[in-house]
Image (cartoon, rainbow, N blue to C red; front, side):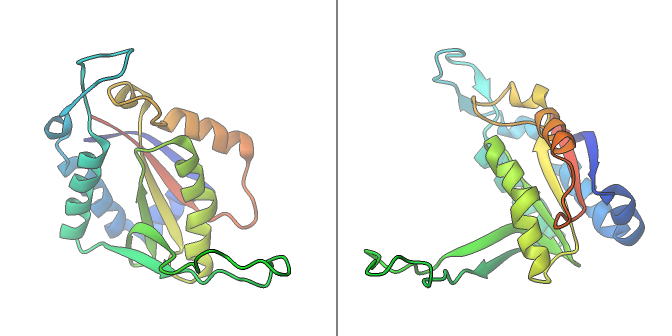
Length: 189
């Protein structure tokens, strides 16, 4: 795969290049090592493109997982203990929340990486909430979000969001005090 777009959210490009150069190089190598052609395996059943061969997001995610793990990047999961003091008096949940967690795809040397081939809301959540939470919990300092370019998304099932849309929204949203630097990579086959 190739990196076809780069967006520096909150000065991330300069920070990551100067302080996390070797990790950035590993991310670039992992992206380049994924052979997109091996994941053009899904036969569309959608009305707008019946029978068309599409890229399989789950298969792509698995390929990225293998590449990052080969470079000693690890998934990081934190347990969530939900507060109950905000329940209305007399409310008793049908089942207590057990096993609740938040997870970031990969972490190494205080950099968090998320790979997102899902809906738009997940991209926004990753950058504007999840990475902030992992930063506040003293696990990461900066992040990298890897998302598909629009041209790549057009070869996937409908509903997958893309780099251009995400960048437009981040630019028009602006930066908040709690945001952390996140480098956005747009990838293509």
